[in-house]
Length: 255
Image (cartoon, rainbow, N blue to C red; front, side, top):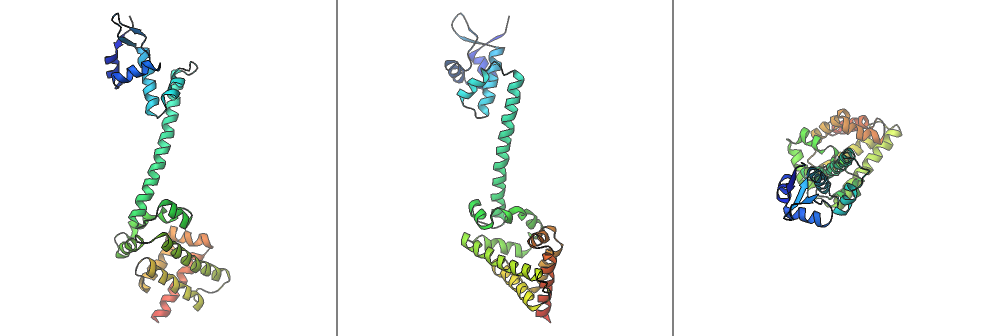
C-alpha cells in the first residue's frame, strides 16, 4: 500500500504550516490524492514531490500562478524541473553578485573618503574609475599620514568640488601630453611649470605635497603598473615624461 501522510505530517516534512497546505489545496496547487474516511487530507509521496517543487519555485520568487503552470505542465520531467530550478538559481546568484559589487563599491568609496553617490561618481568620472584601485592604494599607503589626510579632505567634497578637481587636472594632463607630442623636453621650463602645477594640485586637493613627496609620486608614476598605465593611456610614454618633468622641477627648486 502506498504511504499516505496526514496534513500535519506532510506540513512537518515540508517545513510549512498546515494553513499553507490548506491554501495550496484550495487554489488547486497541491491537492492531496485522497482523504481518510473521516474526511482528513492524505498526501502521497507523489503529492509531496509536487509540494517540494512548488516550494522550491516559491523560494525562487515565482508567483503562485506561474508555479501552478510550470508544475502542471506534463511535458516537463523531473529532470526538466531540476534544470529549470538550477537556471533560476544561477540568475539569482548573478543578481546577488551584482548587488554585492554595488555594496563593495559603496564601502570602498566611503573607506576612501568619497561621499558621492554612484550616480554622482559616474557624472564626474563617467564611471567608477577612482574606486577601481582604492583597496590597492590603502594597502600601499594606508599607514601613511598623507592617506588619512586625503580621506579627511575628500570626504567633505561635493559633486561640484570633484568636477573642479577633475577639470583642473584634465587641463594639466592635456598640456603635458601636448608638450610630449610636440617634442618639448621634460626639462624645459614650460614643462617643469606644468609639473609644479601638478604638485600644487595634489597639495591643494588631496594631501600635503612638498617636493620630496612629489619625487616619491614621480617614481610611482614611472614604476607602478597602474599609475603608469593611466598616464600612458593618455599618451604613450607620458608616465616617463611626467616623472622626468617632476624631477627637473624639484631639482630647479632646490638648486
